[in-house]
Structure formats: structure tokens, C-alpha cells
Length: 386
Image (tube, rainbow, N blue to C red; front, side):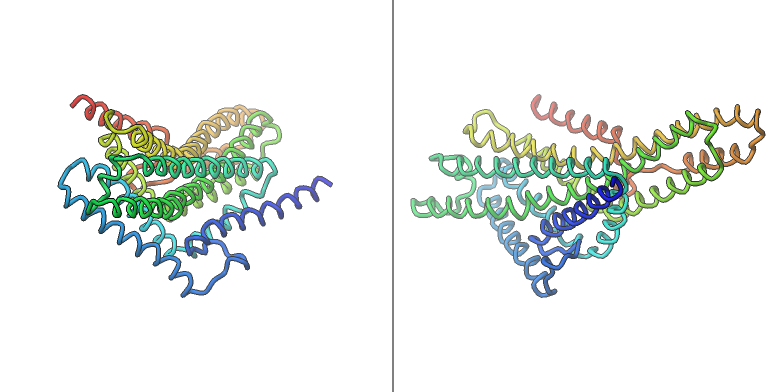
């Protein structure tokens, strides 16, 4: 009965997860996961991909005209972030579209890992739904704040966005900015949030797989009487298989991670400079909300990938304990082959540095996150002291 229940849970979860990712990316003309009701021909795919990017080009031209017209650093600081954010999402969309086959193959491998235990399935579901709720909350709050800004008379936000002022243009501008906000929320804020969440899901699956392997090794340490050469070889093969998947994730996401982190940190710095206490309250709320959203995206990028790196690092300690306990075992039972296998496993672990790499510059870990955070905090302190 338990096997049948687990089999049913696996099939239901597989269907729901495939439908979730397929429909989320379907909106943006991407087919990373094929299911029948989300298939569309190539011309339709390119149309859905290119039409929003055409609007992005027009928005960017408008931002550049506003910046040149008003000729103020303050305007660049306020209009720069949406331009950079639009560029990040455009690059992300075309990168995903170009590498659809690679991402689809990687997803299938990770889906097999996800379905190995009911506990992993529950944790993955909880992680995905929590991320979806937080992302939706940020987008709804962002939209509400923009509406409040547009309904405020003589608002600074309107002053920055107007090209030629008269009463008719002021009303038309409010309608235009409202439509632009809807577009930005759907095709930029939500899209980047979904893509970052997709990367985080993959890291979470691997983190749980490494955690399971650590627990199996720990059980082998506790009950050394059940330790066999076959078990050690199995542990080593599992580790090498998971390490290869981590390398594939690094290779697939490395350019995106570099572009995301550089762009998001730069936008964060601009948002810090644009926060002025004498601005109207809705504008300050908008700045704080946008800054919190940027911080959330960076945390999501680092969270599961850092835990993945931590779980792989713990394995070195586990195998070291196994070698020590195995030395005692070998002295009494003369099992030299097990001892040699332990040493071989230890050498494999020491030779590898498992983790998601950002274009070969650094590995996503707690240490790299703290380094990055300390640099940004230093910049914030310098900005408000000057």
C-alpha cells in the first residue's frame, strides 16, 4: 500500500510540476517543458518573444530622451533602474530561448532526483509555493504603490516622466504610466522572479540529494559492522553523479547569474541614491519596496545554492570520520580494501570544490554572500555620509 501511495504521489507531483513550469514560461513564449496544452508553433513563439522586447526598446528610448532633456543625475538615478532591469530580463529571455533544449534535459534529470522520496517532494512543493506567494505579493504591492503615486497631484514621479506639460498630457501620461506598470509587472518583475525561482528549485533538489547522501554516510559511520566495499563504492558514485549535475547547472546558469548579480547590485546602489527624505511618501514607499524586492531576488539566488555548497562540504567531514572508524575496523578484521576505498573517496572529495559557479569568478556560498553584502553596506554608509 505504501508503494502504491508513493507511486501515486510521484505521478501527481510530476504532472503538477510539469504543468506549473510549462504554463509559467508559456506566457513569455518559452517552452522549457513540453506538455500538450502549451505547445505552439515557432512563428507564434517568436512573436510572443519579440513583441514585448519591441516595447522595451521604445520604453528605453523614452527613458533616454527624458534623461537627456532634464539633464540631471537625479533623473538618471530614478529612470536608470527600470532601464537596467528591462535589459536584464530581455537578456534572460533570449538566453533561455536559445538554450531551451539544455534546460529541458537538465530539468528531467533533476525531476528524477525530486521523486525519490515523499519527504523531498513535500519540501520542494513548500519551497516553490512559498516563493510564488512572496513574488506575487511584491508584484501586487508594487502595482498598488504605482497607482497611489499616479493619483497624487503634482507628484515628483510625474514630473520626471512628463515630456511636454499641459493638462491633457498630464492625464494621458497617467494612463500611459499605468499601462507601462502593468507591462513591467508581468513581463519584467514576474518573469525575472519566476526564472530566479526556477534556478533556486534546481539548487534545492540537489541540496536535498546531498543531504540524503550525508545521512546515509552518517548511518554507515554509526553501524560500521554493516559497512561494505560495495556501499562505499555506491556512495562515491552517487557523489560523482551529483557533482556532475552541479557542473551542468553552473554551465547552464553561469552567464545569467553573473548578469543578474551585477545588474541587481547596480540597481540597488542607484535605488539607495534615489532615496530622499523630502520626496512624497508614496515615492519613498516605492523606492523601499523596489529595494526590498532586489534584496529578495539576491537572497533567493544565494539561499539554496549556498545550502547546496554547505551540504557538499559537510561530506568531507563525514568521510574523514569514516576513515578514522574504518582504521579501527581494519585493525581487527583486516579489511584493507574498505580502507583503500575510503581514502579514494576522500581524495575525490578533496580534489573537488562542488558549488554553483558564477562565470568562474566565485562559487555561490554563504561566504561569498557575506563578502558581497559587506561591500554593498560599505557603499550605503559612504553614500549617506557624503
